[in-house]
Amino acid sequence: MAKKKKDTPVEETEVTETPETPEVNPFEEKYNTEREAHLRLAAEYDNFRKRTAKEKEQSYQNGKSDAVEKLLPVYDNLQRALNQETADAAFKKGVEMTMNELVKILNGLGVEIFGQVGEEFDPNLHNAVMHTDDESLGENVISQVFQQGFKLGDKVVRFAMVQVAN
Picture 1: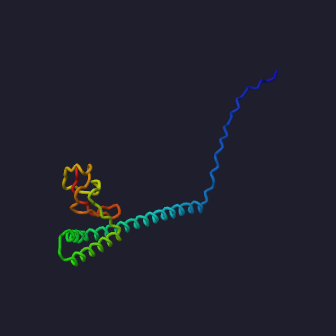
Picture 2: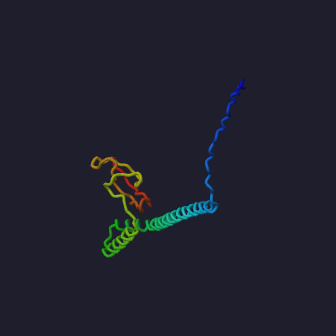
Picture 3: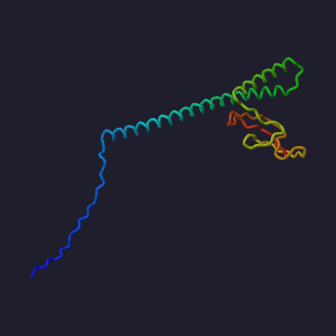
């Protein structure tokens, strides 16, 4: 009789393929690191340049605004002189010419003069110091201007002092 072979279980070994890790070239790694550092430095410099240009422009605008603010009492005094009655025509003409030149200079600097009778009241531009009831004027309309306002770009240098109707 023949001997019967025992069925021996065959052990199956799992073959796991390990993903091949690409060889890292040290020079390429250093290049990428240096390139990234360079790009960051370039971006920081660009941000610095933009920020300093913006600060420079703001400083210029603030200086211009301060200079205009210092000229406003001269404007107010010339306005009062023009409103006074005088018999001296040459004097009045001289004050008018001075006022026109000052307004021309202010306009050249980009200053906008606002606050006229009949304009609609805007709390962002006008300072209402009085109120009157006048049916001939509409709602929130300026009926009298005590002091004109000045604006330089978007910045209000001085609010207009006004009387508002209704």
